[in-house]
Image 1 (cartoon, one colour):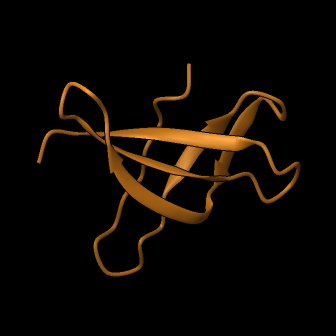
Image 2 (cartoon, rainbow, N blue to C red; image 1 turned 45 degrees about the horizontal axis):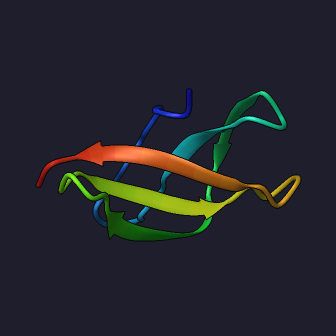
Image 3 (cartoon, helix red, strand yellow; image 1 turned 60 degrees about the vertical axis):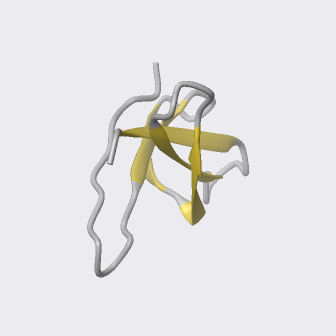
Length: 60
């Protein structure tokens, strides 16, 4: 489960759950994208291990 988010419009601080590190991390280079159902999500890298971290943002 990787659905924790803390999204700010100005600073673009996005946190997600890293499955490898087993904790919440601030994403490195987050990018917004849409799922096939139209929900907005952020994808980035974990700064500690480099694993892809996702964060669901909801419909906007």
